[in-house]
Amino acid sequence: MKLFIDTADIEEIRTVARWGVLDGVTTNPSLFAKTSGMTYDEVLAEICRITDGPVSAEVIADDVDGMLREGRHFAKLADNIYVKVPMSETGLEALSRFRAEGIKTNCTLLFTANQGLLAAKAGANLLSPFVGRLDDINQDGMTVIRELVSIVEIHELESEVLAASIRNPLHVTQAALAGSHIATLPFKVFQQMVHHPLTDQGIAQFRKDWDKARQALAKPAATAAGRAAGSRSGS
Ligand code: G3P
Image 1 (cartoon, rainbow, N blue to C red):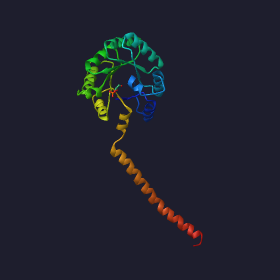
Image 2: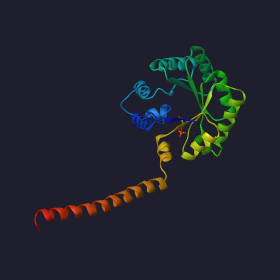
Image 3: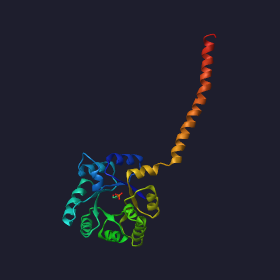
């Protein structure tokens, strides 16, 4: 399963890229609103310098012409831009127009497998069901991932399922087991995946034991050096 980071924070993206586990980036207006000092275009261009994986840039317009205008603009920023289009009647029309133009897309705000099926048929390259937001309203978000992965496989659709609104490491494991092609994770979830109390304790213990062993080795050497110095001075 490919791992994307769900953020517009450049430092977070750089960090995960340095770890060697970054396959792409998803952004949205809410994530961009948390950044400061750069325009959305500047943020996207900088992200595309860090990774050559897919980078999702979300349109704001709710009419087809507006979506097309914004999407074409984003697509010119870099070859790896995927235009993120929300599921709606106008969104479907924009997706099919983008497909005809060869512009890659990610259909977002999917909450049912049927919405995902429509988006795939309209030509979306990536299908983004929101797992956490479904869990929030007491519906099983992972069921939509499982259903959509099966639909894509059974009907040999070309789209990839991107598990979004991932809130914790368990979601990542479940999405991977469900066969999701991609999951997009907040930076915090990447960090949570790295750490385990037994790993962290184990590292601390190994360091402690290593220092102890080195000190024990250093002691006889110091004593021998002391004896040699003593004999040279004639004592
Ligand atoms: O990229 C969109 C999605 O991942 C949002 O997540 O946590 O705001 O539901 P969340």
